[in-house]
Length: 569
Image (cartoon, rainbow, N blue to C red):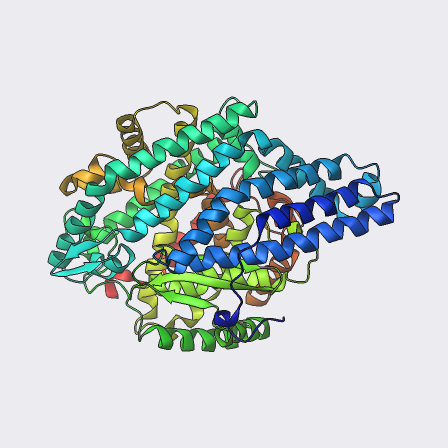
């Protein structure tokens, strides 16, 4: 891996898009004019290499902006990206057209793989220059949403906090503090609700126009294409959502009942939903530096590959962990193809979520590192549901080392597993909500709120019962802070599918660690060279879409939860 000494030393470059588009066009014309299969392959690689260089610079701008949304230089550069990226996408459409219709396609498929051509065919189906204006508007609105959320300040006990920083108060041992924090948090969101709803309304209509301009009935069809759903469809997802309701919702309901019992309550209030123990949630030891040191010990012990890579990330300042004013909320990993390395972005707030980041986002990063040698950019990283297997599975591979981070590691293990199970009904709530929204783009803001509330009653009724003391949530406002609904439509069922596969890894790891880790390494190295379900077959795991897989996977998890004896923690 080659990179400059530290991230701070990377040059800040804003591309001259006129020159970039001209050069890209020249390379594409060279591909079209190729007079032999070998020449076409060489021209393909020129386009790919140039795209890597441009994407490296564009990713750098995007990361710097999310690190400080108040920086005028980054604001200006990011606004330029929002404006120009659709033109780049349009140019790449012309390349996709040339590639899939190449007279040398048979030769190129032999050398590059047939999936690459499927990917480009999906690109052709999901973008056209006639939707450039809508794509620009979509980018602008998504950026405005991120900036709006990042700028929100909660007035709490004489101080101001951004949303991520409120996490430690929302999970405080003291129920009075939690309740005050909850009220302050949702009061802030209520004050911004109209603006957030308006941004989403605009996004829905922009995406609906995109879909109809491209000849689709609605955005659901286009959304699946944009998410590269190569081997499953909305009908399969609907059946899967129902299996979550049938199999997992009852388990999650029992977890909630046990949660109330452990807190000494007859019923949970909104302020209790994120707290499992009367003595408080597991709180990680030490500050950020300490957590990073412990993560290094963990990855040193886990494998030679994880040991080297985590040290590389630390040495080159590729971890951006602490919550700061002006920093966007959330967490992510992104990859730099020229530097051949990722960065990890998060907002530490002193809760166990900090440790989750060091495992989850590291899992994403580790996959990128393991697949860095794949020359074809489209194959380096898998589609989103497969990407999330890498991250969520790493969370479970890390569990044996939790004594490095917590005084009572079983407290964390119980909370992590309980929350992971309970996440599944929430995840399908998000997915069905989005499907309904885009099937009914002209629904009113009030109807959207009501639909969300109905879906919560369907999949997470145990949470709705706790909302009586929070009008904001009772009205159906929870979804307004779920950034994926705004920025990445339909990117949420992916988390649930990956979670089920991660549970498969967890079950196998408890029986045979060497076998589980070998499969995981193979998964990471394969990158995105196969679609989701084929990828699972390649490593010998079952697809969540298969009948009976969900129930078979969940059954041992309940036994593991009971083994932690949470009432004694």
